[in-house]
Structure formats: C-alpha cells, structure tokens
Length: 426
Image (cartoon, rainbow, N blue to C red):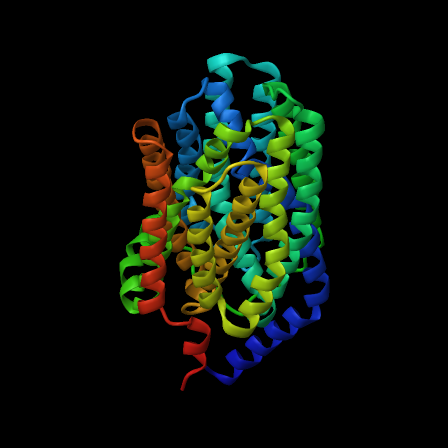
C-alpha cells in the first residue's frame, strides 16, 4: 500500500468514526421498526397457520410457501453483489430494494382482503416468492452497508440491541394481532390486518435509513458484467478454504430450518390455534429472541461469532428435542422460547461471521455466495420437511432437522476457525 493509499484509508476510517453515533442510532431505529414487520411474517406462527387455513389443511402447501420464499432469496444475492460492488455508495440501491421488499407484505395483506379461496392462496404464494427475491437482494446490500459504517468491534452489541428493541415492539404487536385482530376463530381478514400492520411498521423503519451518512471508500472494484463476476467465484472459494467450509456448514445447518413451520402445527394438535394461542407463542418466540440478543451480541464482541453460532445450534437442537414432550401451552411456550433464542443467535452469528472473512473488496461476492448457498439449502430443506410431514409425520421432520443441525455444527467446530482471531495472528 502506497503512502497515498494509506492516507486515503485513514480519511475513510475517520469518516466512519465521525458519523458513527448518528449511523448507530439510525440503524437502531431502522431495526426496531423494520424488523417488527418482518418478524410478523417470518415468525414460525402466523404465516404457517395462515397457509394452513388457505390450503384447507395441507402441510405440503405450508412448506411450499416458505420454500418459494427461500427460493426467491436464492435467485438474487449475486445480482445484488454485482449492483453494488463498483459503487462507493450503496444506500440508494438499498432503499429501492427495501421499498420493493416491503411492498410484498402489502400484497399479502391485500390478497386476504380482496381475494378468496384458491386465488387468495396463489396470490400469497406469489407474494412470498417476491418477498424472497427482494430479501435476497436486501440481505447482501444491507449487510455490506452495515460493514461499511459500523466497526467490527461494535457490530455484536448493535445487532443485539437492535434486535432487542425490535423484539419488544414485536411482542406487543403479536399480542395485539393475536388477541384483537385474529380472535377466537382466525380468518383471512384477521391475518390480513396483521400483515398490514407489519407493512406500516416496517415502512416506517425503512425511512429511518434516510438519516444514515454513508462513507465512501477510497477505492472500489471496476464495474463488471454479471457473468464475469460469477466466473471469479470458484477462484475466490479456492483462495479461502476456511470461508468455503463455513459456507458448507452454514448451508447444512440451514437445512434444519425445515422444522420451523411445523412447530406451531404440531403444538396446535393438542392446544388449538386460536388467536390468543398464536399471539402467546409468537410473544414467546420473539420475546426469547429479544432477551437473548443482548447476550449473543455481548458474547460475540468478546469471543467472536463462531462460538455464538455453535451455541445457538446446540440450543436449537435441545429445543427441538423438548418439543417431543410438549403437552399444553406452557410446554409449547418453552419450546418457542428456546427456538426463538436459537434462531436469532444463528441468524445474527451467521450473517456477521460472513463479514469477517477475506478482504473488503470481495465482501459483496462473499455475502452473495454465503446467502445463496444458505437459502438454496433452506429451499430444499423446507420442501423436504413438507414431504416428510405430509407422508411420514412430524416426528420425521424434527429428527431429520436435528440431524442436519448436528452435522452443520460439527463442521463449524472441527473445520472453521474464528476468522477475527485468524486475522490478528502474525
């Protein structure tokens, strides 16, 4: 690095520090409101139950809806990486993709208000697919933006506090949705009001990003055609075997996500699925994620995200095992508390761990690789879970889920070093 390059990098880092407090607060506000809306859609309670209602009781349709969402997330990470790799400022692209992402939640709500029967179901499935498409883009863009404006030593606490605040709001909204909007006999209109509320909250969250001041790095890669960018990916994987093994492990563990939509359906066999039950279990799920976020974040800042990833996988396995003994609302709530904390820890750890491999110039490509592999595994796993539930029963779904979680965790434990400490080593 030349003296001029070092001076340019120093100016960039000073710019990051100059706007750090403002950007930190903006990201907190964005997470508190933005994540609330998406948690209503992505929590393993409202959407699986809604798809079950629209499909007339088909476990496969439940898994198909969530698989289509994951498939959409598989299709666009590389497109997003190609869109931002040559840009010194990526926030404008993120605002556009974020607005499109939120419009799909509005579409889900409108399907319930204005469509009926099979037409409503098809509309919701299409909306979930588009939600995945824009989520796949936003996952790369937003995480890259986060890596630019928040130093690595502060990302764990920011992630934890942001999700903590979002969890508090989500729990309150889940109670309102379950007790007041859905009622004793949930119908399409009640679910639509729930998702419309989510759309309003997450749109307000997107507006908070207007306060962000994004620093411009001293240099970026030249703009390349998408095909040329894709052609370089095999070499990137060969040059960083630890990152390659991490992507494999994350994908294997993500296969365990197949069980998520079936926790609520399995518990509902014994306790029913009225609005209050859905609201209570959603509060348990989001509340556990809320409280655990502070612990996950603080632990990650001290030890790195590898350890929190392993602990979250272990907690996920234990919570799934507890589901076998579920009988009554209290036991079901305990399962959702464990799963909520585990899923939040897994998501936070895997997203942030991706940011710590390799160099800054290759970060969009690494995000795209990790997210695509993960969501492709999620697509396959969710479809497999639906087939297992439909033809062999929920027990098979949970057993196969635990198997994949165990294998993914074992690969991380044995073959993936903590990248933060590896960079510090001489």
